Image 1: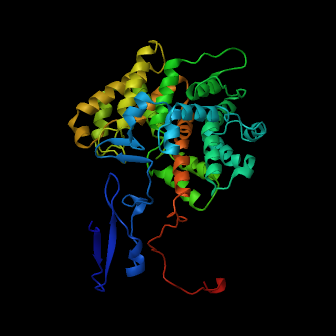
Image 2: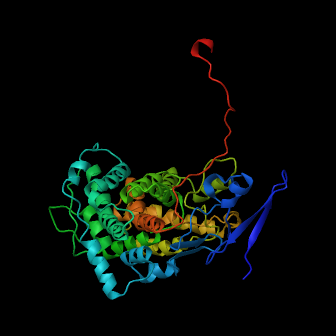
Image 3: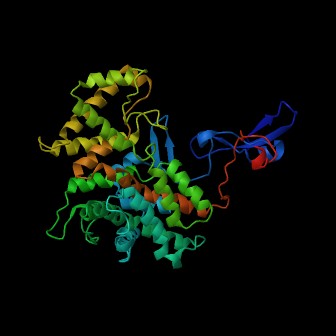
Length: 434
């Protein structure tokens, strides 16, 4: 087979360098530019790494133009319809779907690692009463390394997997306790007789005073939302986890770094922005067309949140799935539910956008964040917890990516280069002479 290469010629010096072209299983080919600096003395310049593959990975594939998302080769539509979140966790971590015995063993491991060390309660109580749940998450997840310091050999695959199991298992408890501490509610302990999603709802909303009955539809919806958010290739937070982990930081520190990155409103806060937009529309008294016209006006700063995507230039495949969930939940809500109006606005807004040439020509289709926020509200999950929910679901993707990187022979500590635009060399002048 003929080797595929690209020849780069320096027009200034006449020097040439031949660069290998790497072919993935699916997706665009990539030019290996590592010889560019060695041979010609040049770096590549790519702000935001929008055209740079920072790693090779066999975990997640997405094609924004086609609207395709696959975990380990399995389409997200099939996994959301047929699978469970814990089965998807096993798939992302191990590369293959489990058989019955493997699935049972994995569920047992996760179920029996959901408890937090009792001393962790004191750590939670060190935060201000009104601390944001994401601030608590960053601190508590990073602090897990203090409780498992005898099991942090990142070069031991068995220890890496135990850390992965602990993170997946304990994240619902950490997330729920962050909320309950913020609200002044007593901490509830996990239940081994409940599914992953059921137990999270119990941890969030149960009280010691009476039995709590989990709504099966809400538990199913939550499980699907977790699946849809489990991984999304090399986004900002995943790249942060990889970069932090490349220094051989422990997995809890690397995941805490990912949570901090996710906290940024440009990454994990999109569904909160959607809810704020729908609330503004609802309270304005203006017609929906008024807001659509504002969005079309290039001189108006108003934007329709939840439409379009940095990667997807077609309909976000996750949005189709979550829309069906939203409609099913909406049909269950009583007419006097405070979130009913937001659902109605969201439905009508989507209809307008899908039929309007302005939005179609610009590929402004609803994304996964468009409906997830109103679904969370219908469950009783407040806006301050939206990004926490994202972090809970994405933990398995982060730790799978980290684990893959630690086993990659080509892994190197991350060291991006720069295009220096500062002052040239100059001599120091003493303070008296300045």
